[in-house]
Image (cartoon, rainbow, N blue to C red; front, side, top):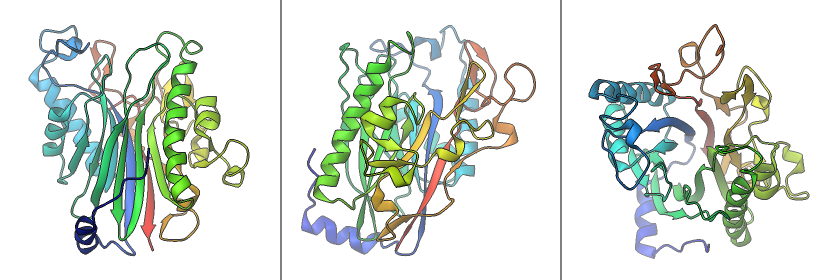
Length: 331
C-alpha cells in the first residue's frame, strides 16, 4: 500500500493546529470483551447479546457494561486508544458519551461473522488524523475476519503510523488456526515494509490482540517483531515487540487461559521510535494497565482478568483482557 500523499492546503492546516513539540502522547490498546448493542443484526452472529438472547441482556446490563468500560478508559488517560471486540459505531458513540474525554472515532465495519470490529479513539484537541483505511486480511479458508485498521496521525510535523489489530482466534483448535494468524502477520508485514521502503526511519506503532504470544511464528517470523531490540534488522526481524517484561510474567499477563499467563495484547514499534529523532518511545513507559479491582482473586480463576461475562453468566467485571500502553514524546 503506497504511503498516502496529502494535499498542500491540508498539510498547512494540520501544522497550524497540531504542534505538539515536546509533549508526551500516551497510546493504549484494549480488547473490551464483546461490546455489543442490544439489537439482533440478522447479518451477523450477535443474537446472544440482543434483548431476548441467551445471555438475557437487559438495558441495565448494557449500561453496566458501558459504565465499567468508561471507568477503565478514564483511568487510562490515553490520547490514542485502540479498541477491539466492538460491534459498530453506535456502541462506540455510546461509550464515548460515557467517558470524561471527548474522543474522535475512527471505525470501519469489518466482514467478521460475529460482527466485531476494531476502532481507534483519539483526542482531536491534541492530534490530527491525516489518513485512515481498513486493510483486509484474506484467509485461506475463505472465512471473513477482522480488517486491520491503518491510521496516520500527525504529531508536530511528523507522521505516526498506527495499526490496530484483532487477529483470528484459536477457536476450533490452536494448531488448525495457525495459518490464519500467519496470514494476518504476513498482511501486516507487507504494509509495514511498504512504509519503510519509502521512509526507513518511519515511526510506526502496532497494537492489538494478536491471539498469539510474542514468540509464536505469526508474530516473530511472519510479522517480524522480536522481543530483543538488538535483533531488529537481523533475519526476519524488522520491528521491536516491547512486551518482553510481561512475557511469561504472572504479574503482568494480559490474558489467561487454562491457568497459563499469556501476552496476547501487543505493542510493537519500528526502529524509528528508538532512534531519538523526531518521535521517541519513552524509556520504561510501556505497561500493562493493572489494578486489584481489574483481576479476580481467590479460587480457580485467581489472577485472571475480571471479565464481564463467563459464558452466559454475568460476572459484571470489565474484560477478559488487560489494557496495554506506552508513551512517546515529540522532539
